[in-house]
Length: 388
Image 1 (cartoon, rainbow, N blue to C red):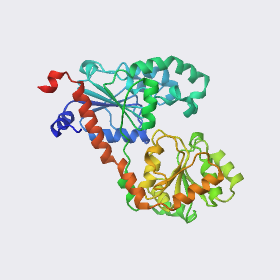
Image 2: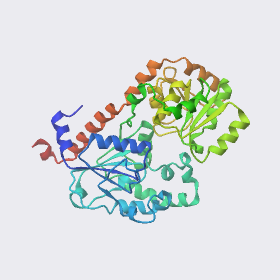
Image 3: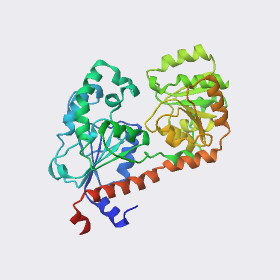
Image 4: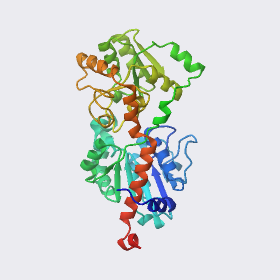
């Protein structure tokens, strides 16, 4: 049940603090932090280091930002738990951390030390708790570090008065790793931005002119766990051209694979900007999304553009895609399965896709996160303070 509006105003007015891991120019977790900053504009903001190229202005960074380890995430991992425990004095009445590694360890001095702490969890650290989902966890050093850090991470996860998970998939992982209950609040997606027609500039138009009229689209960073080779396999199965859009270290391997498996049928678009990305979505038959993600913002963006999604029935996509209505799931990625999935996807309604995407809009997120923070902070107060 929603709290009275008066309580929402009270939470908005108190001195809150938002905490994030490191801040980069772009990324799904950064999008969430930006949305949190808009919901709570008067809250102070802290992070490990701010390398967002001007996207964010923060009130403080940890001491790691003043060392040669700034920006070197892998090298700094061992010191991050300590950095989060040595934060400055703040006069805060609540703390909300956006965490996908150790930000939930955050502890301030001063009044902030005893303030209720809440966590919006993108995931418990994947390469510590679920190395099978993150190749960074497969090294000897990472496995050794995980053994040492699991106990500490679980203890720190007992400190928050409430935890929100970005999906049911992550909610289950939180229960297994941290032994905590959590509330599912899906992350915000700029749905309205994908409802409008794209406005590609002249350079974008030139790029589009080099592509076929219709195609299957794969969009992500070019890294192995995104499994973009399966997008190529889908194109082969359905006898359709494929466009792979993005950039990353796996590009050379993907180009070689494409040349071997489907010569002349796979087109690469490197690092498309926002308008070109929207134009690619508008033109494609379907987005093919083989990666196993904690939530997966790109499939929701595709549906907002009126395009169906073909994905694995694992992870966050099971919470956003409706089989036969907004896309199709593929279990084993065989040729027959892929051909069937493309046929199903090609027949879905663009309006149904858009309606489904609206369930994950920024407005929905703002309402849910505001209500959750209000309820959690109120529940953490002594009973006499709640009834005063």
